Each structure stands twice: as structure tokens, then as C-alpha cells.
Image 1 (cartoon, rainbow, N blue to C red):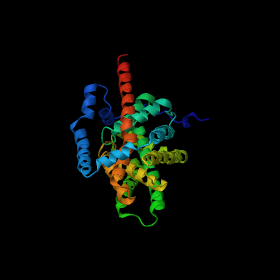
Image 2 (cartoon, helix red, strand yellow):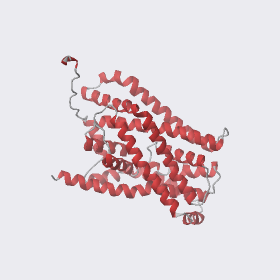
Image 3 (tube, one colour):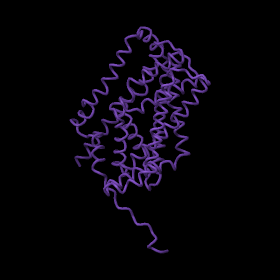
Image 4 (cartoon, rainbow, N blue to C red):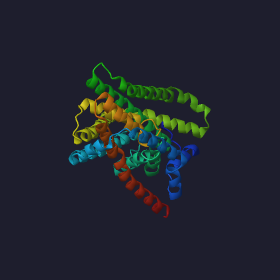
Amino acid sequence: MDRTSEPKPLAAHRESREIESLAEAAERTDERALRRTLFGWREAISIAIPVLLVIYVARNVDWVQTLATLESIDLRFLLAALAVYYASFPLRSWRWSLLLAQGSERRPGGARLLVILMLGWFVNAIVPAKLGDLYRSYLVKRSFGVSLSRTVGVVVSERVLDLIVAFALMVVGGYIAFGRELPVDSLFVFISAGVLAVLMAAGFLVIYALAPRLERFFPTEMGRVVGLFREGVLHSFRALPLAGALTVLIWLAEAGHLFFVVHGLGLDLRASGVIFIAVAASILTAVPLTPAGFGFVEIAMVVLLTQVFGFAQHDAVAVAVVDRSVSVFSLLVVGGILYVREQRSLRHTSKR
């Protein structure tokens, strides 16, 4: 065999300082930097606005009846909701491992990747702008040696896949629930999802068609970063058959935990309605205005449950409170424990 035809080994990749600085902004190891990250003025504003919005809306809620509904919850259903919700994380970790393995000799996986994924979800629940996605990409680089640029590209493809499947399930659930007579109050959900889909499709087109032509205009190192990012996005879709099936299961788990919440409160909502509400609420978290969509998701759930599905307001509020307790507040506890352990591990490693 002609040795000249053998592919030359790629030079070791050195991250762009610009991207390193972004990652470091999302993941600080000392306590002072952590306080600045979590309690900076930007984060305070992003939390204060939805809190004020929720307080304003909550003035008209009958909290006596809401508390009565909350007290009636069947704890068995609540535990089932928690079990189904946390069962989605191994599925997400498996899918992420598949996407990361495409076009790479390394395939991160195992318990460590699962912990990294949950840490990213935890950070997304306490800071805006989806910094948790950048944080988990940074941890993958540090733990498995995968390029940060490529990992961020994989995360982008993961989000695109989520949106495609979520939008499809929302359309199917909406059609089964409403038929051809779509309620006016649900239009904003379809419009929001449609706008996000168009923006992501446009971004994907730019990455696919224009990025290779634009790379030569960047400095050498930045061009390599762009190339690795594009590679991470495009190569991920080679795992589409299995990754797509896992994504469907993930979103069914999202709907499953809401199903147990609704029925645990003694309320009635058909499976198609549960899927529609769960997917619609989750799509709103894709807009990184507030941590985990706080404020907007709760209000949207109450509006949809009352105006579209005819729930009493106090029942709808109870559903929103329990659902977000399962999907956000419990994650703050579990993720907080993992985060403290992660920081201790980092400090221990840095002392060696």
C-alpha cells in the first residue's frame, strides 16, 4: 500500500481563547466566582422579572382552593412522576453519547456522562441563557478530552432534534385533542414553536452551506474552531435513527410525569392533552430569557389548562406548582448535591 496515500494525523487541537473564556464564565471553581456567576446583576434581573410577573398574576388566584387541591395529591402518583422524570436522564445521556461518538474515535459515556448531563440541567435551572449547555460541554472536554468546539456543536444538534420531535408530538397531540378546530388561546404556542423551528432551520442551513466558505476569512485557529463546531453538528445526525427513537421516548417521559401529576391531583386530562401541554411548556424553556423558563412556563400552563381544556383556575395552578416542583425544584436539590460534590472533587484535584 502506498504510504503517501495514508491520512496524516491531525494536529492536536488547542481551544480558542475566546471560547475558553466563555466556558470559564459558565464554570467557576472558587466560591467568590461562583457567587458572581449565580448572583450577578444580570442573573438577579432575569429572576426578578418573572418573580414579579408571577406575583402579579397570583393576586387573582384562590389560594385556599389551590391548597385544598394540593393537599389531595396521591403521594404514589407523585413518586411515579418523579421516577418517570428522572428516568429521562439516562435516556438523554445515552443519546448524547451516541451523538458525541459520531465521527470520533472516542465515545464518552457511563455514569460520569450522566452526572455531567444532570449538572448542566442544574445550571440551566439557576442561570439564564442556557449556560448549563456550555457548562456540560466544558465538563465533557475536561473529563473525556473531546474538543469543546465539537461538543458545543453536538449540543446544538441535540437541541434541534429535541425541537423537531417536540413540535411533531405537539402537532399530533393537538390534532387528536382538538381536531381541525384549533383553540385561539393555543395559537401562541404553535407560533412560538414555528418561529423557533424556522430560526433553527436557518441556522442549520448557514452551518451546512456557508460555514465552509466563510472559514477562510477567519484566523487559522478560529477557522479550525468553526470547522469543529460544524463537524459536531453535522456528524451528530448520522446517529439519527436511534437518536430519534430515544428523543421520542424522552419526550414521552416528559408527558408521562405530567400525566401522573394531573391524575395524582384527582383531575382528568386525556393523554393527547397531556402531551400537548407538556411539550408546549417545554418548548417555552428553549427561549433562554429566564432560568428554566421560570414565570413564562407556569403562566402558559395555567392559561392552556384553563382557557383550552376548561380546568378551574385553582386546579390549573396546582398542576403547574406540582409539575414544576418535580421538574425544577427537585432538580435544584439533586443537582445541588452533585454540584457540591463536583466542586469538592475539583478542589481536591487542584491540590495535587
